Image: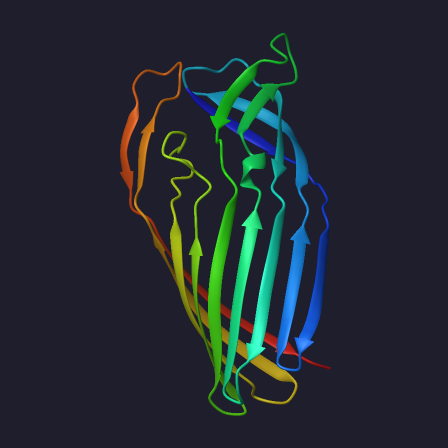
Length: 223
């Protein structure tokens, strides 16, 4: 049979940030984003060969906090240089248990997702080139390690280390308006998997090939 879980929650966190103008041509920024705790509640439905057991369910999960440190430097009238490092506390996500909250089986664990993620540090560098008063060219490179591991990796999230390469163009059609076009490609390392989900028999053994392409378009206007 099949199991479908429909659930949701609303929660709150906070962001803190500071920027220092170290020199006339250099500024340094720091940010922190708090953990956000969710109690996801909803309903579970069984279909197929198993039709009994519909009811209510919940899962508790804490999304990780993160902290960033960045620097921006004006090299000359044409070039601007940037760098940043972002720490994310993925180790706050060890596992996800979905439990029944109604009926005679209340408290029973319906399914468990084992994560055992680790904290990561993402490193990035970038540059802007002022082609003219209206056009600015952007470029960047970043290394983004995965929080997953070869033992607990699941087909739900077959993630691996990523290398980002990005390019963009900023165009100012007027003093108030700015158009941004950007493209990024993520080179994702192949991820292996050797996964079992007891009490079901057998294991899923193999590897995943992943890649990501991101295209962005934005417009901002100053009043």
